[in-house]
Image (cartoon, rainbow, N blue to C red; front, side, top):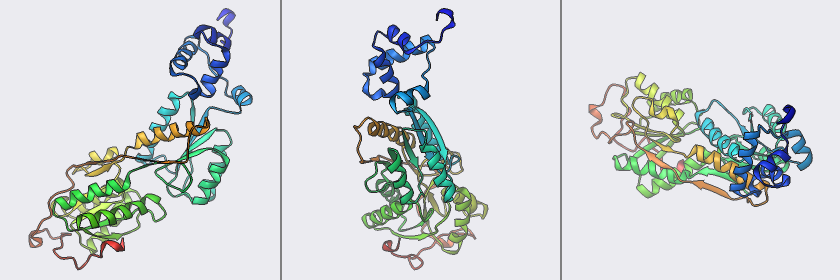
Amino acid sequence: MAGNRAPTIYDVARRAGVAASTVSRAFSRPGRVAAGTADRIRAAATELGYRTNPVARATATGRTSMIALIVTDVTDPATAELLRGAQEAAGAAGFTTVVSDAQDDGVPQREALERALSTVDGAVVAAPHAPDTALRSLVAQRPAVLLDRMLDGLPSVVPDIADGMRRLMAHLAELGHEMVTYVAGPADAWADGMRRRGLRQAGCEYGVQSRRIGPFPATIAGGMTAAGELLRRPTTAVIAYDDLIAIGLIRALTARGILVPQEVSVVGFGNVAASALITPGLTTVASPLRAMGALGVHNLLGLLDGSGSAATDALPVRLVVRGSTAHRRRNPASAGRGSLIVSGAGSYLPVATL
């Protein structure tokens, strides 16, 4: 620019061949500008080195073009995938994301939510253990979309958990397992209740009985702890709340000389990257985590421009078969010293007790 003057919105408008108001709308409310026009405006802005002023934009429009991504554990691999999808979608729409790690410990979580909401237009929330009241309070302050969580009247994006549990149960039934143990996740997790419900339904469909142990933390350490209880309560197949618990189970069982899958089959839920790295590879349900994050942002932008709704989107899942499942061994006498194999149903409870 002449005299090293910083480019303005009017310079971008002239270069793109549009009105200055269209440039402003392209950055503040991208959903209201035709895709081709928005692309031309972004190209002109990049060529000129134009950068929007978020303070001025917020003053003029009441919008900051910032979205809060509120999570409860940024170190969780599933959360990382959700965030990646959300950030990619937000960036493509011209929005900046602010990640808030609201730990699951009461007051600090509420304070984190308050801080995050003070500077953004809306929020995408992946807080599986947050109280219902906290989430409703959040939505009362800013438009928000929930990820991996459903709450009546609030928009959300979830995996099809019922179908995922049905696929796992069908796989284990095909391998000859007549009874399975469900290793439960955190007691206050919405997804845990949905997994148990899906397991009951699938058990009735395939004639497979189930029991539940837990709850356990949704961590590798939680799975290793669960292995100790499995040793006291034999089983031939295990469905873990998520991949991290399943990985912990495999590690602990292997360390005790129990062969996976020869003596016990183990499956998870999520298909995080580590599920393909452990030996044996983990059979699991692949949740479309990145797609969930992206759709959460898309739906939030719809709420911001008035075209959204409080609907729930349940995205399809798929079964990923790896090496942690095998046909049920029919002769428990041939199992190893630490075997978890049982031949009868006496130590199992009916499906309805899940």
